[in-house]
Image 1 (cartoon, rainbow, N blue to C red):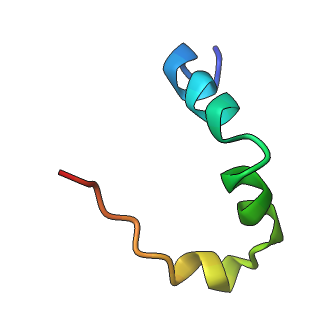
Image 2 (image 1 turned 180 degrees about the vertical axis):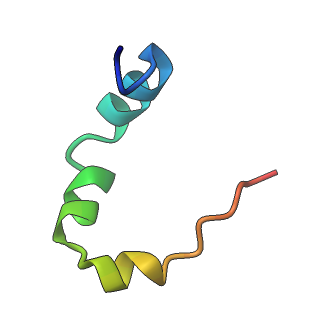
Length: 40
């Protein structure tokens, strides 16, 4: 079973090198402070 759907993989590819690079440099504590709410 794949962990990610095709749509999820496509989303990651779009943001590769931008958002993913920033996430990799964040600590767990910093990530926990990010407000992750769905946009309307």
